[in-house]
Length: 421
Image 1 (tube, helix red, strand yellow):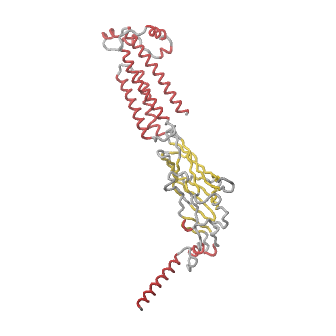
Image 2 (cartoon, helix red, strand yellow):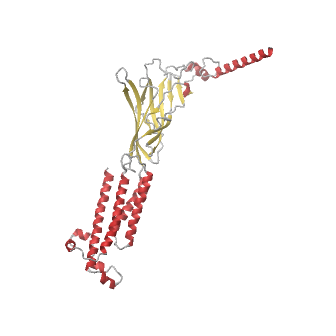
Image 3 (cartoon, rainbow, N blue to C red):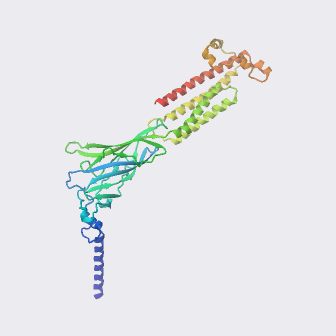
């Protein structure tokens, strides 16, 4: 029996020592003999403190939250229509349950505590892409507690806001995206968010993006009531951050825009080449291959999530059709030059009458001498430079020059549509 009593007594003694040690280490305890003013302050301040209760003595009084936002970095996911913004916020509020006299605690005026030690507001992004999963919120790691009851915190986090992107003018596109941040646990009568005047958004910590230029950013307060009647209406408060961004387009224009212009110029230049010259067919085929390659590249690069077709793809598609018609026109004109029958007399008469006018001369139509001197074999020249051959060459050349001006007008119209839309 004596052994059992000794074991029972030893267990009771260990339990008492552990209880005393736990009480001594508990920052929320009401008693303690610590010689450190800081430790004593923590014990006194957090004695019976409830972190779940709003820090106001009158439950009808809202907690006034003042906020300033620092934008640090932004990026955009075009495939998912997501704007990602890293934000650092400065928020302050008053806790009516926390106050002390600095002279009673060695002159300590401020202490830093973990967020779990005091009441803190919850700030959640409402238009989050993960609305039903992991939410984007501004995480508070620690809180500065002042002897007057002023609470100061620096919540930060990456906000992934959903944004409807319009890529119609890519790569010269601009977008306006909004992020709605507020509390899910408290309405406007319990937590009132105020933005500091002239300091709503601070850009001192912003790091420039290599893809997007942040043209402007602003923050505003949004208040609204929800309820069927005045008796049941509840006030809700949100703050809205508006981001206006523009894509850096100089690099994309150099790598995509200029080669497309080169393909278009190559297509138009073929109308001034001799139909029998193999370089004409080669240039047209190279232009066709360039158009198809760029269409495939842009199709893989740009997401198919825009509300309307992307303008550069429309222009490239139409230019591909023009290049294809150019290739067909070359084949038809080559067949026309090979005809052995006489062309319509009325058409030849009309061309001869117009040949003395300025506009037709500008088309640089060939004459008899040009055809007669276009070969190295003099005997062949005499036989091929007949009147019949010349008339068909004249008609095919006129078709070439006319198509050049028609297709040039088409490209000018496409350019005006692109620049004015």
